[in-house]
Image 1 (cartoon, protein in one colour):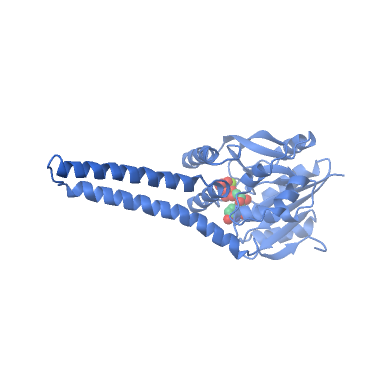
Image 2 (cartoon, rainbow, N blue to C red):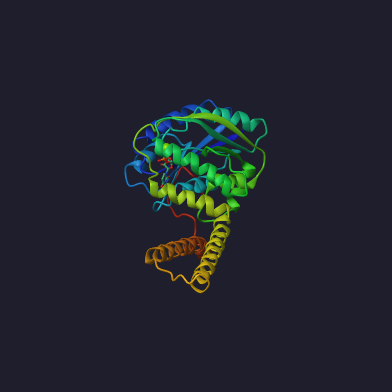
Length: 311
Ligand code: UDP
Ligand code: MG
């Protein structure tokens, strides 16, 4: 009999935990195989763990990994994948924005022989215009920047087969962009459309700061274009500077005009200074990532495990 693993990250989700368990467990009971629901507590500071521990006592299909602190959504998903035993692993959010009922459609596609089935948002309900627009623009920008084909408008809600999960375990990079990695590994991939619902309760655990970090990880993990773009920008400003220098010299010695204009000078200095800092920053960003990798620390630290018998 097939075993399905559902992986759900939790960060301060006390308001949604119980409803989430009820809905997901309800869907799983109707599946044609056995199942396990692996919750990963990503260092919650509220009652999430307490509620989860109660649930684990009642239902042994519910398992919990608890981190020693907040390691971030992408790392939490990774830990879940590492511990999942299923023939297929499904990753979803806890807030029921990814409707558990879609799991059945993901599994149907998996049975047709696909190794990755990702859920594409055809509509997003209850999210701010700002979030919708920035994420729409970002997915397209990422596609333009990267050499691999990352599908637009998909989150981490997806199914991966055992084969893909085993390959994912070998990718140990730190600043992870899981959906990019899943595209990168290849295999037969298919999409299923769904309507992204409103958050069941509570508020988003992805403030702008975390969104920006995730976007930067997406771009720098899959593209070195920012580096070559910086170089091109440098060439462009240097050429423009050179042409301007020739004009200045001609003006002085051929046309006998002396240069006035302090304003234009300061503008050019500021502009070029700014560009230099940006370029340095881009280079620095890549160096910081090399630094992170070279430290070779574990991706996450697990403080407690529940219902993982004998592991
Ligand atoms: N999450 C997490 N660690 C974090 C932030 C979020 O594990 O540092 C989890 C969160 O509990 C939820 C999922 O990641 O299950 C997606 O977060 P959220 O729904 O807040 O993001 P949004 O849907 O607003 O993009
Ligand atoms: Mg959400």
